[in-house]
Length: 581
Image 1: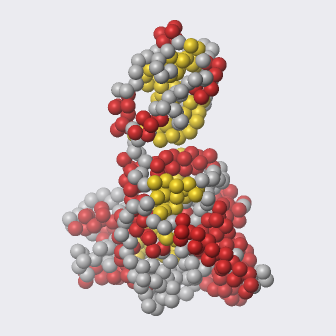
Image 2: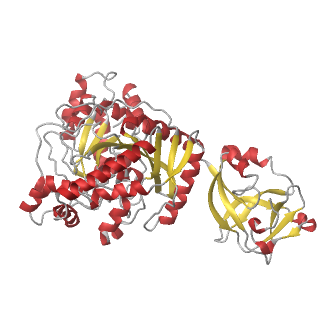
Image 3: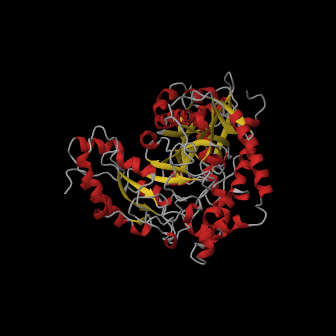
């Protein structure tokens, strides 16, 4: 029996301390992981699930290595099943394709050398072709928070294994977004290093010139601890590059798309509000915001599946598909066979590569000393919805991810709150490959700031505190951020107080009354008390009833003030009152 309770969320720092203080042994942790994997068996997380007999040799090895000099001593990790683990089958999500490697992939070898314990091989969208987590003959991997939703792909099992407490971190791969999308949907961090920074020797290719190995974790710090172990040139890998460990520093600016960001699926409106909130949080950072034309990023992204890179997938897997008819997952085979179309001739390839080079140069100019920030995903769906429309949903899922490797960018996906309960919302920071430190620095300050303002209270404002009016700056000074426009229930009198400057008052009526337009902001609880002291009589903060029947804290006015005030209820909005500024 364990000497101490093992938390559901496994973190590197907690486990290291538990080991150091001898309150817990690696064997006890691995036994608990095996139990958890059996408990979640119907979630289809694993292809080769955790078993003590397979884990035991790695546990025995721990007695031979020094705890203090082995940064990952006894730390359990999961491996996407297109990455080689010696003497364990690599299936890439296709049993007929399966082979058993005699040696570890380079990344796995480096992790084991640092003391990490591989616990199993995880499920994936077959041949790493997909962003939804439903394209596997081993079953659809369930979302870790809401089983009816997709988990994201292709590194579905890897992300969910961490989210469900069956690994401290896990390895995924990322060609079109597979190391970021599942992070967003399962409340994790997803780090995608620059192309070549982590060796891909021992990884089943998807688009070999674009493939990256990635890590899922619960925090930025732990993702970069893994990065420090794995990163480094491998002379046996033709795609490996010398890329130094990134040193976190702040960029000179954050680039945001200037046009409206589209979202898709049943939670599109919730995602839109979450993005608006994230943008306001970004504006609180000590970094200049610049709005940019995002269109060329979209054009670059289209080259991945509407250009020659789908033919690169066929180049690696086409022979297997031809020689093994009807064994590939149907939608996967459809995507892969599209790479064999006659249009992908040499002329087409070079036209696409030349266009892509133009996009790369534009990105190099635009993102010098800067980071780009977008939503991580364009929406989410139930697994049933994806099954009915697998191509369109998958395409929409990659709306903000597909450009990344094509433009030789590094990326890190982090959490930015919730779109609704148990529906996490994530954003991604992108930087040029040789400026990875900028995403490390920007993401770190965003996450830290987000934690500080996480405990907030919604406030309804209907006058000078709204956007564009004189007291908006007061809201911003107290750390508040705009959430949405809304309307009160049809129960309010709206008055114009005889003050200097003029300001409105909102009075709830027993009967009659109008619906008044207002704005909902979120203010840190830590700032709320001081903010209250600045509100002059006859105004105050009370409960305001909205049109949907819910109540939020907001500006109200004492009833006696109506005697000497102008009734402006018919205007229904302070913005429509003449000379109101």
